[in-house]
Image (cartoon, rainbow, N blue to C red; front, side, top):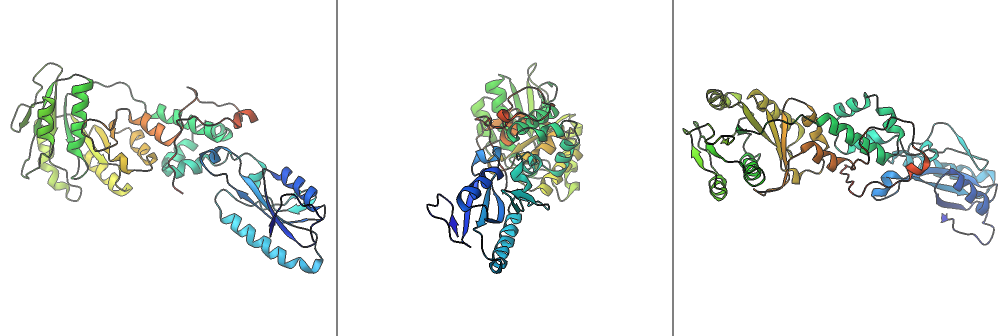
Amino acid sequence: MKTVMSLPNAPASGACFRFVAANADEAARVIREQLGAEARVLSVRNVPSTGILGLFSAPKIEVIAQVGAPEAAVAAPDAVASEAETSAAAAPRSELAASDSTLAGVRVRTPRSALREPRGHLADLLKRSGFSAPLLSRLQETPHWGALCAQPLHRALAEVGLLLREWAGRPASAPLSRAAFLGSPGVGRTTALCKWLSAEVFQRARLGHVVTAEFDRPMSAGPLPVFCEALGVPLAHFPASTQPATPGGFVYFDLPGLSLSRPQDNAPLQRFLDAERIAERVLVLNAAYDHAALRSAYAAGRELGATHVVFTHLDEVTQWGRLWDYLLDGGLEPLFLATGPSLTGDLEADPGDALARRTLPAPARTALVTAGPADEADADEPAGETSTFHTAA
């Protein structure tokens, strides 16, 4: 099989050629000019563009054509065409149409996606970015979905980001004053507390102290004593004062890990929180855990009356899209995302904005576009430079 470039002589009858064209019209012109009117098209399949720009451009089409051959030689090329079409059907975003279309006077099975802009893949891309089926269903049930699918892909993604930011937005709440940090062992609970303390002291210039408690199980304080000493934040072991020492100050509690397999072991923790009337309870979750473990820990935190949620280990997670379910759940207020092991940084204070930046392009406008499909000039606009996608193959 040969690739069509420019043929100086008439090609031999029965020879097969392969070439890639931008669309069906260009393919028809190449066949007509290079192979002649008697050429037979054996197969057509999509060839997706590579790189990040491939998400926003129409796929090219690969055509295998044969110069006119005797009728007895037709069976073999048909088998080749069948194999090529089967391979094309197995490739992502390459569905062959059930009906025939005409290409330069020759009847050929042409992919429908080759004859239109690739605007029907928004849900597929969001799914590969980690968006859950319930969240996709919620997006598809909005009155904006039809308009979003009609937009060029990069603009539709930006509009989805705007919509999710709107859903995740919350009214400004009062700063934490007396909050306990809760979480199962290994989630980075104490590290999350240290990150929050550094933000309180360095960024918000607040004063306060930290209380640790062990109950009936010994607990390692880890880096907390040294860190508090470096910050100038007093650290006390319960029993100690659980009220702020200064007006507008804070008291944070570092408590033993909660149990996911034995809920009855959490009874001392529950009694302490209730007896000390600690209403603000921050649940710390390891975002690198699988979905089942995350849901189990989330449910255990809700049982203990959690009011806020923190996600850690985001530096180990390639797909952040699955966290949207927790931000949009409405039950717990997102406090921050921990994006690294540092005790004084690696912190995203606006989880909704951080997730949108990580999973979707930066928005170009401030309102949803509900008009009809964009014109061809819009379809060729590149995505913003800050756009970053993390999708599974």
